Structure formats: structure tokens, C-alpha cells
Length: 264
Length: 116
Length: 170
Image 1: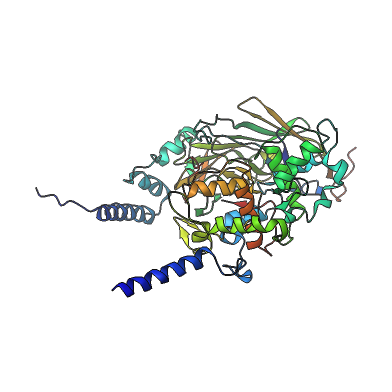
Image 2 (image 1 turned 30 degrees about the vertical axis):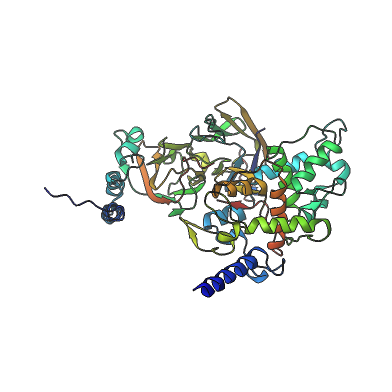
């Protein structure tokens, strides 16, 4: 009796350790060839909204962002264009984020970079998180990378952020005690109420979310995921959101950037 | 604040019936939803949107809360004359949005008999 | 009288079976009016569904109403009620003598029955339209058109909406 209890305890302990600390931190749960964009799990109406070049509902914000690119701002009276040149030159920029900011050593997502640039270089008032202007600009910059594959720099100073993001993705939380992996790795393609679960990929962000009737950032969506499992939502700008974003970029490596994407 | 996107065929010949697509930037707040703090978001929808060509009304829509945010309107027009196309919309806050387009209608190749 | 206490599962099944039978019966009847009215009888505690009469009477009044010439197109199953693409085609010569003057899009279940009113004329060339509407749950949608002779034509389509538009979801 005592030996049986000891054996099962040991087994559980080992299993628990294996789950908590995977032997190779870069083992992919969803292999690269099985990756699917959220578009794959969206219904035909959502798909046709996204592929409609003219009437994609995200186009309004996109147009707005494109216009802001050449608008002089702040004490510097410079527009983004003054330093960066044409918007098309931003091709390849959004897929480099999240990245470590050399000046501060912090992990920046694209929104952080834009906000930072505005204050530091344009000497303009800060754009609040998720404000119309910030979301529009992020979308405009991301749209230049349309079709490019997601990638992630996860070594060097970014390594600890990647590992934290991965850990968060695997950790159960909230009143519902669910980890991101429970739904998005283990049950993608299956139905949650009436909706098919997607893989939770980030290749479409910022995207037009029909439920919110506007373009939304990845951070907003992640915070809403926290609401979904009834976990305490971290404040805007929290490093955990950026760490998860970095992990998601690695997890979705190779998926094409869609901009503007449309989701339910 | 408000802007719109217009799509019209690049080449229109007199007598054509062409499609006009207009995507308008407007939240179309129904007044039924609440924000993150639980406060009702005030109703603000486009009350009417009209399209005039050389001052003559050629299309009008009066949407209500039942039309989706960032509304799309697609309608048809018979190409009779070139001129100034003006799209004008007014919402509950009495904000006026406008979009102008110079419509170019090419004359048909069929030569008309000279009128004496 | 003896009452049997139903388990939650049994009572939910009962409700489901009744509604299913009612809806199937209603749809089978075929005619648009019956289809629309039958759904009003549903026993589920949802927003009250308008009858066909209530939906069209304010516009049609005593004029003639026929189900012809209008082809309303909506997805049978809408992913999200906030943005449902809607298009319609109307068979009309759009001449001075015979054209469409108004088109009304009417909802059976939305808080506001009229979703949009369009005004057109012979200058339109064609009476076809497209827009995107909000639908607050499963319902019938009517596209009602007024002809230049004062009479009305219409089409109706049923839409199943998996996520309603007017319910707040943060």
C-alpha cells in the first residue's frame, strides 16, 4: 500500500515537473506546418469582409493612419515622414516587434515604439493606449508588411521575455482556471459555444474586431482573453502582455501578416 | 474626424448604369451598448446621407441604429452628365460629413444627329 | 392531480423540443406571412418578435402588397450580429413611368424596427442596393419597396444570428 502510494506520488511529481518545466523550452506544441491564421476559423462573411479591398471595415482606420503619417506634429513640427520617408519604407518593421529598445533595455511592442517616438522625437503629446490615433498609425505601419511572415528574435536580452511569455501561455489562471494553451493548443478547431476556437495567432493584429466595431490592438485582445477566463486584467503597458506577444510571434512563425484583418 | 472612401468605376460612358460604393467612417453608436465602466454610450447615428450631382439629389439613405458601424452603402446611378458629386451626411450630434468627387462621364461613341 | 418534478435536463429538453417543433412547423407552412407570424409564438423568453403586419403596415397602409420582383440576400447564418452584409436586387425598369421610389429594410426583433430607408428614382438606373446591418438575434428581415404607382413589393429572409448585436459584450 505504502509503496503504491509512493510510486504514484513520484509519477505525479515527475509528470508535474515535465509539464511545468518542459525539457526543451523551444518545443512547439503546434508544429510549423499545422499553423493556421484566425482567418481559417472565421466564417465566410468575415472572410469576405477581410478580402474586400475597398469595403474592409478596417480601411477607415488604415486611411486615417496613412494620413497621419505625413502630418507634422508637436514642437518639432515634424511628421513621421520627415524622418522615416515614405510609409512604404516601413515594410518589414512591424514583424521585428516586440523587440528590445536599445535605449531603455525594455521590451517594446510596435505601439510602444510609436508612442515613444512621438514623445521623444516629435516632441508631441503622448498618444494614450488604444486611442484612435495610435491604433490607426499602428495599422498603417503594419499594413506595409502585409504578406510578410511572422518572425521573432528570442535570444539575447529577449530570451527572458520569451520564456516568461511562454510560461504565461502555459499557466492556468483566473476563476475559470484556464491557460491559453488549454484552448488554443489543445482544442483549436473545436467549438466553444457556437464559435470554432482558433489557434490564437497574432498575425492579423491590429485588426477590426466586429464585436468592438473598431480596430483593436493585440494588447487589447490579450486583456480581453484575461476577461474571458475571469482573471485580473493587468494595467495597460504591462510587460506580461508584451512577453506573451513575443511568444506568440515565435509560436506563429511563418504566418503571413494580414492587414487590415477582420475577426468576429 | 469623419471621413469616407468612395469607389466608382474608373471609366464611365454616358448611358452606363454604374455602381457607387461608399464606406463612411462613423461609429453608429446605437445607444444600447455600455462602455467598460458600464455607462451607456450615447446614441449617435447618421440621420441621413445624400448624394447630389450638380445640385440634384440622386441618392438618399436614412439609416437608424440598425445599420452597422462604419456603414457601407452601395447603389447605382445612370450616367447622364459629368459634374460635381457631393456626398453629405448629418448625424445625431449635427456633425456634417462631406466627400466631393468630380464625376467624369465620357460621351457615347454613337454620334447624335445634329439638331437644327 | 399528480405533478412530476422535472429535472433541469428534462425541462430544458422539453422547451427545446417544443420550440423545435414550433419552428419546423412554422417554416414548413411555406408562405412568408405564416413563417413570420409563427415565430412570434415561440415560448422562449426573448425579445418579442413583431408580426408581419406590424412590420409592413406603417408603410404599406392600404396599398397593394405583393411578394415579387425583390430578391433579398443575407447570410443564412450570421457570424456576428454587429455587421451582417445585406444586398437586394429589384426587378424594375427604373423609367419615369415605372420605378422604385423607396426601399425599407425592416427587422423583426431589433429594438428599432426600421433599419434603413432608401430613396431612389429613374436616375438610379437600377434599384439594387447593398449595406451592412445589425441584427439583434435570430429573426426575419423584410426588404419592402415602394413602386412609383404607390403599390408595394417585398421579400423576406430568415437569418440565424449566433451572436446578437445589441447585447453588450465588453
